[in-house]
Image (cartoon, rainbow, N blue to C red; front, side, top):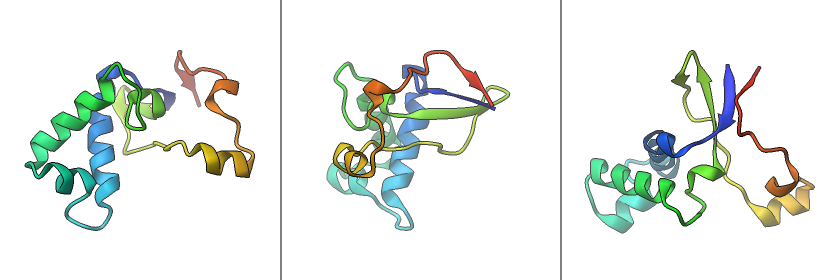
Length: 105
């Protein structure tokens, strides 16, 4: 298994993960309600946001992905929450080593 930082080419996978996580056990999530579009269009929009130059909480730089034999695993992601992380003593991303190259586990 390889765990690495997400890249722009992972945007479709990240988009599906975001859409699924926002829905939870319900049929519609925040993007479904806010955009009012069919699922395919919502996914395409989220993928564009995830790969955009502007960094947001949905940007690929905020995610890690896990691969087995070059196949992405089901969501292995973590949203950053700076205030909570600080309270819990979690190191900021700036103080953590970059995952530019894949690491084997």
